[in-house]
Image (cartoon, rainbow, N blue to C red; front, top):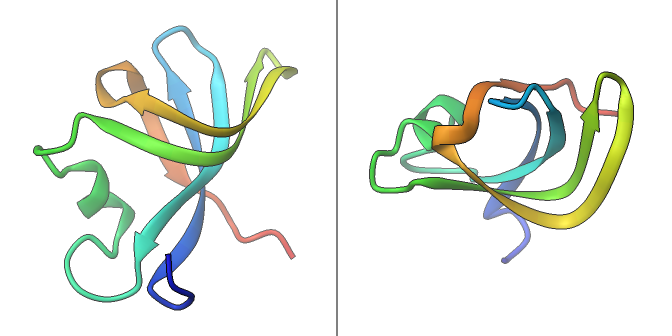
Length: 85
């Protein structure tokens, strides 16, 4: 990926098991699907890729992954987090 073509968007996902997954989604900086809602609502894609993912359950970190792919059907909610400074 070229610099400036994608922006890193930190997100939190709650899955159907109740676990929280924090990670980063790469969204394009221009054109279609620049918003998280556009990306998530794209019906041609059935999965969401995250980098630097941390999975926790009831506040306890279970696993950390460099990258992970999550089925959209397993998602209860997804929210964009504030950039960490």
